[in-house]
Image 1 (cartoon, rainbow, N blue to C red):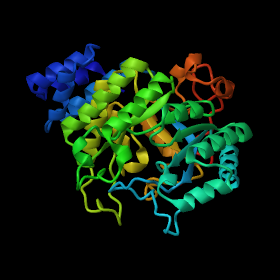
Image 2: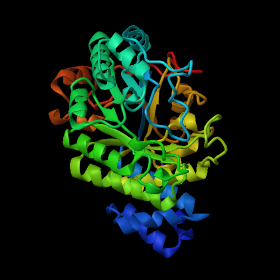
Image 3: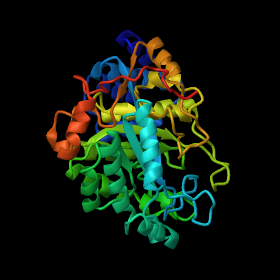
Length: 410
């Protein structure tokens, strides 16, 4: 854990303008937009001071606990109407690897996860594939549905009722009615903001052929989720061509939405990983220092109470991330791979626990919905509320803590 004398010594190498920002954060003040943007200009030896400040703010605002969610990953369909330059999850319907899961397949995974102590069912899918693929429309009709959304709602309900796992759908851009319908059968929802850079949507940019990645479209979706009081996970994706200033702007946009609606339960800082057979296969990846500083910036912008997550499977050396102000590792599965990043296996939970212990923290299993939202009935639909509360202990974490190492990935 971070102590204040170490933080103060670290500030000795920081330029005056940046030091004033870090000291303001340490004093518990909300950073102005102008102050936050100064965090984009951290240089050289100033990085450790930024990390130490973020860690001190985390330790002041939260107990000495780092969390994770034990989950199954359910890729409902890997068809998508968008084309992102870095994605290998989405497939064309002519690809032999394209697949829309049947109810039997989904229930089999959920039951296997239940048997191994999982509490979360993470549903991931492409944006509105029926708008692009006739074959997908045929598959949906075979399952008794006319839209991917209708099918997703039914599958979330099935998993919740048949296994008790708490659905967390990450379904892309949804309208108000669609969000409300999913709210009735899920404990939380999610969608990465990724970036607010319009440049990335221009010809040659990674989002040029992905209309659902337009910043205004994603921000509107996040706003709708807030208006509907949905506990929501979002975050930024770093290393896809955005500038450091644009990273801060994305975090400020998330802060603004959360201050208005109070619904963003965690902010993920995800580092881009180059994948073969994509247009960005040769693009450079963010290094550990860059990732740590992005995590620290998220902590300073979002404040001590926000949960800040960095996925450990996307970093070869993830232990130092604890020094940069994060408090959560995200979902880890004992059963299913990370279908979005299949080349990146989940870490072994025993190793995560040891890393946390060495840094002065206890690793605890949480639910897909964060403790802060369990006490407010406005945030959880009546049909889901009792399922969630039955799983939660007095602190809002998972009541039945699955022993670390039980069924964990190698």
